[in-house]
Length: 326
Image (tube, rainbow, N blue to C red; front, side, top):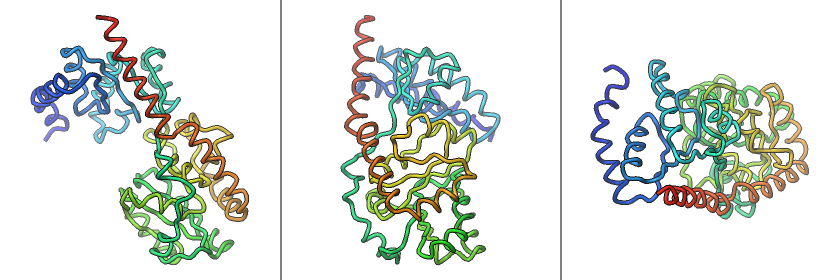
């Protein structure tokens, strides 16, 4: 089947369903996708006279599975974004992208990812999780959690494990997640003989994640630079921060745009990752200090209550603006 034919053939059916829901249930329409239902939702919002807000987490055409779909997806992006009443972006780098393709700055609103700071917080104990996976309180855990994209960079961390386990015999790397990189990580674990030092656990239930993060000494987000990662600000970072953990993350535009020197997060280039982990494993006081700074920064900038309040104001402002026009 030619890529994209299914989406075209289902256009009218999806439009009917979306239009009925918009008319019946919505005061404001919030859209998260362009390729699947963006045009249908845009038309529905206009026919029903309901404001449309697009919530952007990434540059969608760069995620297209087939090269042939990238240009039409980009064209749809421009069409939908230029006609949305508001564009919510999760990072300053995404705001810059929107401005580059012609979206007025006054239409773009920055709202970072939110985290429930009551669920993820420093008072949660990780002792039960450590015991479950056969680790003691004396082990030093480096944690990666989340979807294992090819660009996740977890294989880079594994490449440093031989050096780390020589310097710190109780160091352990714990990987919680699933995705296309998982097979490679399991093969590396066998080939390098790291089974005693690396735990590859697969996907864990979200309800378990506060305890998983609580068990860590250092949390990492070592994304490799690329077209699909540069604008990202993964929610795992704010979960790490809310738990009061020191975070080592790749210095990419999306991440850098929401974090500064007060955040407690160490932003590094790939060449700096190994040395940074060595330094943190050797200095417990510094880990604690940075973890406390991360928690404070998270409460001030990424807490669910603060972000939700701002999101509600965006919805209300969009509705008020539409009423004023009429």
